[in-house]
Image (tube, rainbow, N blue to C red; front, side, top):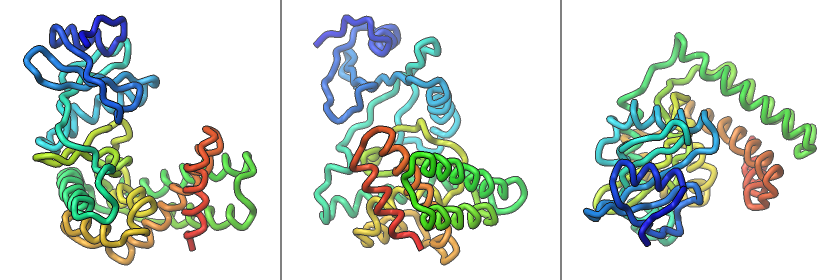
Amino acid sequence: MIATSDDPRIQLAHCLLGAVEIAPDPVLPPRVVRVVAEDGRHFVAKQHAELDRYAGELHAYRTWGTHLTGHAPKLVGRDDATRTLLLTALAGDRADTAAPGSPEEELAHHEAGHVLGKLHRATSMPQGGAVGAVGAALAERLQSWIDRAVHADLIDTAERNLLKQHAAILDSSLMDSAVCHLDYQPRNWLVGDTFGICDFEHMRRDARIRDFARLEFRRWQAAPRLRTAFLDGYGRPLTDAERRLLESFGAIEATTALVKGHKENDLTLSTHGRTVLSRLT
């Protein structure tokens, strides 16, 4: 349908592209809309509710998008007053629609590893110096989630002590950093003629290995072949030290899922948090 709306996303698209039509896309979240310009090109407009998320995603596209040329949307324009971005639309199907156990699923993980490897290699900083503060910051973040979980009576004393042990591990660990996507999972991958990634609102410099955490605890433990395919595309396997570090990132994954699942009354997320917590040693 032709867009004649007071919606800030449509207004931004109309201002920059001229007449546009809305293209219904059921896989997009409610705050994102796909539009088609008169020349047939597709774009997505995204409005943020929170200023920090808007600023973070805008910074990501303007600063780090050059490392992902051909694999990421391009920023077309923005409206700071309404926290709205207009981006080119990537072609392809979401990778989480691939049949579990299929060659297509394995190929998607291989390509995802390859693209993430490009971003990490282009932005990596070695261990030591200011980078040593990454572990302390992550330990502090984990402790804040532990406190919320205790306050909501979501964990017992033994579980609290286990999580605090992982916070201590993070606090004492040196780790290399890179610009990380931090929501790197199949729902944010697009598989077509080229492999694309989207949703940069969490992207920032962080511990490089943390970018594997959601895949490890949401996909790979149940399907190790996907881990193998991903790391083959990434260009190198994990070291023993990195595998141990990844387990401590699982403590963050578990605790945030428990707290957010409780707050949002999301049983699936709460169950995921409980499952990850039970796997930690």
